Amino acid sequence: MSTNIATFAQQMKKKMKENPKHIKISNYNYLLPEEYIAKFPLELRDHSKLLIYQQGKIKEDKFYSLPEYIPENSLMVFNNTKVIQARLHFRKVTGAIIEVFCLEPIEPADYALNFQQTEHTAWLCMIGNLKKWKEGMLLKELKIKDETVLLSISRGKSYGTSHRIDFHWNNSKITFADILEVFGELPIPPYLNRETQESDKETYQTVYSKIKGSVAAPTAGLHFTPEVFHSLKHKNIDCEELTLHVGAGTFKPVKSEEIDGHEMHTEYISVSRHTIQKLIDHRAKAIAVGTTSVRTLESLYYVGVKLACNPDLQENDLHVYQWQPYEMDVKCTSLEALQYIIEYLDKNQMETLNTSTQIIIAPGYDYKIVKAMVTNFHQPQSTLLLLVSAFVKGDWKNIYKYALEHDFRFLSYGDSSLLIP
Image (cartoon, rainbow, N blue to C red):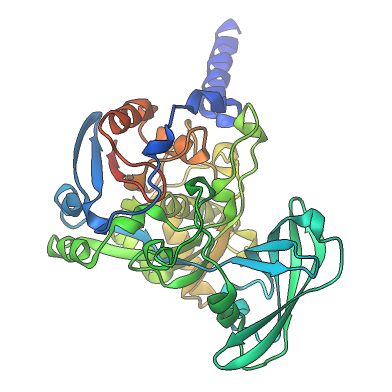
């Protein structure tokens, strides 16, 4: 009996160790001087510095040398989301400026359909200077495609710190995408502490961005150039794309002492059948470019697990919840999970998996698909730093110490790393 109790205690201790809910975010802090934060990108994207971490050893190179460190016949996965000009400014008759920051579409909820709307659409938005906008509509006259457009907005139901905003305009020739293109401002990260400049419209997009929907760039991809892709192709490296629309929550700081108190934002993902089949062809092993690709790839595993348990689920039931990876007790290989998704798509005659994820990846997480990653250097006490720590088995301090001591540039416009645990 005592042996059974001891065994049970060991099992519980192991489970508690693997569950990250009680991780103290203060253990993931480091001093980041302001001068280490890159306010602007380098003129040549692929001339940024690259830190290579491989099995505990660290060295550095230039980003254009990245293909030299990627094994032939590997699979690299990129997030092809495109940053939208999501910030809109309205002036009240009193002179007060109201900022409306579009977060995600509500009506219609599909990004592509929403951008195609004429005359009306609704978004979940954050509102700057909210106390100055008590009620009523705000108006703005715009000139778009030689057409005069009167745009009005009204505030609806609140959702925590965000609000429903209904957009109406009086010209059926003009889409909401047209309005954002002319009236919107690109939302560069707040920690850059500067105004958006015209150059950001190009430099804050990856060269392979395609699908509009993000309010922040998948910044690890900013270093890639056509020349780097050519070198990857020369080594017979497969480059596949998926889509995760990055929300403003990516900048949300962890304010709770333990990460159990931090709520991850929902992000919308889209992965083609072709890409999932490629993952299967590569034995469910991939090199992820950016933490957004990491979260998408790892979420695929848990979507597959859900389908293994119930193959008749509807698409909106496939959402991956924040703590799902730590609470599901399943025995399913990564290959099997991906095969369940293929079967689901074939059964429903679908070419693309569209769902959402709130996955949090922190120490204690067991990576299922991602075997190496390209990523920038992240903010102190952030969930992205937790993700990196989980990947390098807690060795993040050595990596960041090296980067600080060797003058690497940090955050969105900064340098990058290739992590191979």
